[in-house]
Image 1 (cartoon, one colour):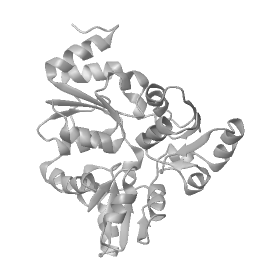
Image 2 (cartoon, rainbow, N blue to C red; image 1 turned 90 degrees about the horizontal axis):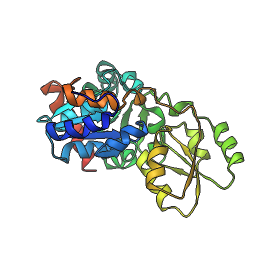
Image 3 (cartoon, helix red, strand yellow; image 1 turned 45 degrees about the vertical axis):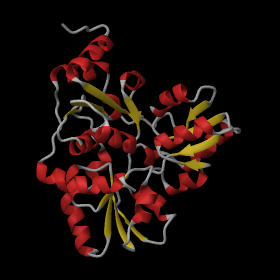
Length: 302
């Protein structure tokens, strides 16, 4: 019988019974991060999905992340606790649209942000995450690169290469709403604080920042930096992990409104129910998975 008052107890028991691991993104609510085996950004969780032992993966994130885990671990059962936790940016490009772009630029390499569907990954040469986008672009032999779907991450990567980057006009609905005026206002409120922002932010926001990094990169920077105060320009869920891993540092959200509603759809009850029922399960058709895995595997060795 399940315990409705303390789902943590059920989660601990069911994890052992199912031989399951729980992966949680840095943007998940604090109580979900606290019961996870691995908390990280997209690249860290991709590596964990491919390497960690277990028969079941409970992926506390959004749909494309669970798809990536299913591609990398086809022998495992992959469950997304919140079935409707989607990534709006991933929905901003379709395989047909990408095929058309490829037809117009036949000699271009295709870099697809991991925030895409499995079908779009299958049409791409290599994936990237926000933590390795620059390295991925620099690793390519081609001089022309179609970069999908995040225009802001594409333009950030373009700063570090002479390659011609062709950005798709997609964006993160959370990061794209952060403004340079918010950075200036935050600096006025916290003049001693260093400003750290995510590369999904607009170029003018990046220009105002002291440091640009993925979510896990931001955490590492805060933990090792000499500074004691930081303004954090990404989804507010990251502040929970920072508070645990970087004690003694004071961190302020650049925008209190930087909340991904889809990331917040997972809670302890949905995790408990996912472990109990092993539903909703995420699968990828073998043909799509095989082609998408080539792009993912290329990313993992960069």
